[in-house]
Image (cartoon, rainbow, N blue to C red; front, side, top):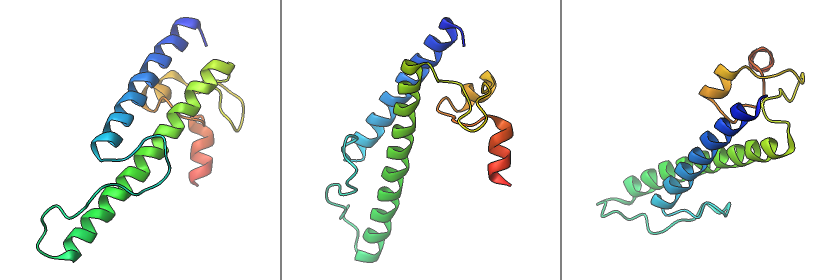
Length: 117
């Protein structure tokens, strides 16, 4: 991968990391900890079942955002060590269209399709 492409993807990943960290902060979660505990989930709901359901949704979202953040940080490390953009299964380059759509992709389209089958 050329230096200009690598720098472009680094910027894209940096922006994505910042956005994910901001989203986690807005949800009351610490992006640097794996704990799923956040603040009070009462939200003024009249019944505890609705409050519990809402809390479950927020915790699931936090978990998903943290997973994406870990993948973004992993991709940034791969840029630093020179392995970014290479499929972890077959070692072939991941096409730029896939990286544009999902910059923290670890598998090429072919290997991802095999994994999903």
